[in-house]
Amino acid sequence: MLWQIGVVVLIILLIKYLLRHEHSSLTKLPGPPRLPIFGNTLSIAWLTQEQMFERMVELQYLYGHRVVVKVFNKYVLHLFNPRDIEVVLTHTKNITKNKPYEFMKPWLGTGLLISSGSKWHKRRKILTPAFHFDVLKSFARVFVESSRLMVNELIQQLQNEKDVLNVLPFISDFTLSTICETAMGTNLNSVEIDETKLEYKQSILDIGTLIMMRLTRFWLHPDIIFNNLPIGKRFKKCLEDNNSFTDRVIEERRKKRRDTEVEVNGGRRRMMLLDLLLDAESKGEIDLSGIKEEVNTFMFEGHDTTAMALTFGLMLLADHEEVQDRIHEECKSIFGDSMRTANLSDLAEMKYLEATIKEILRLYPSVPIIGRVIEEDFMLDDIQVTKGNEVVLHIYDLHRREDLFPEPEQFRPERFLSGEKMNFTYVPFSAGPRNCIGQRFAMQEMKYMLSEMIRHFKLFPTVKNFKPTMKADLVLRTDDPVRIKFALR
Image 1 (spheres, one colour):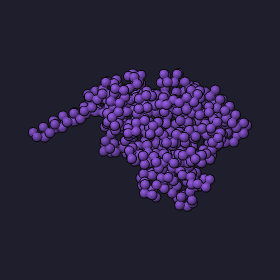
Image 2 (image 1 turned 30 degrees about the vertical axis):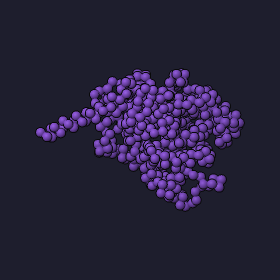
Image 3 (image 1 turned 135 degrees about the vertical axis):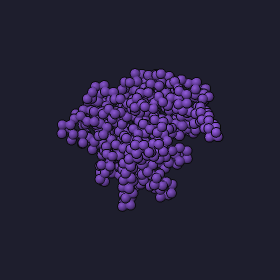
């Protein structure tokens, strides 16, 4: 009899726990219809990644610019307007990442992307010098060489009568090599890792898919269940493939530091990101697991997001010959008939190309959604957002609001030529205390690569006005291959 009473009490306590946020002021906001106890959890449980992306995009059209979704006892506030997004991104206490990032911890640990509080502040302080303007200047040689190799490989493919290219696998090879040689100080051509490089790139794609499957299927959330199912075993294998590559990168740099002095640039030590981490290790400020956290984080973020941005960018340029021509004319005004590679002062003159890159990132921001777990209550007008709930900022949808960007689906680089500050209407690199530490690095790399592409080639779409089907993932991604036809100028 006592055990039966205990079960009844436990059920009552469980129901009270699941319903404890029912009186939150967020309940007054619109959102999809909710079931008792489960809220909206079951409505997303069997969605594909493509369906999940479509569901997220339609929220604002169905319910407005503040939408509440309930996941069991927790409220998730989805925001689409710049004023609300500014409040969240500039909050100095609410910097903790939300649920999807929890499932990334077995891969990225609690490195700069995921950590919060004192650990985040400490890591940010260690790593910020790696992205100082003077350090970025010293990377110019690597950007130049990578861009030149990319062009030469494309020319060779054209000579072999291969003029149509699946862009992403091709581009990601060069963005991966670039982040390794700049931030990690490791030349991928100097070690025999072609096979592990391919496994590494595939592991990132698979990790994203598995994390999204786990996120939408609530029964996979407990580690003890996930780790013992086939999906968890696949995830573990992906982590092994991923780590074997990053371990090689770390060991290669260690060996180089032992065998020779660190590169000198103008008589001063060039403080690459991995060197900063290894120096911090020697001072007892970080251990090997901490180094691996940051290397995994920056290897992923430093190559995959840029590769996706360049892929979508080439797709848009192929469809807009007039934009290509204008970039080519701008380059011609800078270089004349010379085919020399660009330097930093050349990049500064590429105003139209910079506007083009900004427009690419407006339409296809590499990180389309940003999430926070609320650590400190705050107000949005008369709405109190309380500790323990989550806020999701829809960057992809913010950039496509017609009241902010007239004819938002149109590709118009001219939007960014006025120099007018857009504040929180345009945030492809986030903003506030957790803004992207590598945004200048990414812009510089994209300028080098796109200017070299347009100077040497004309781009043509294989399908006019191609619109790939987007899917929910760790970065903005599509399953549709983006194929482009290249011709020498």
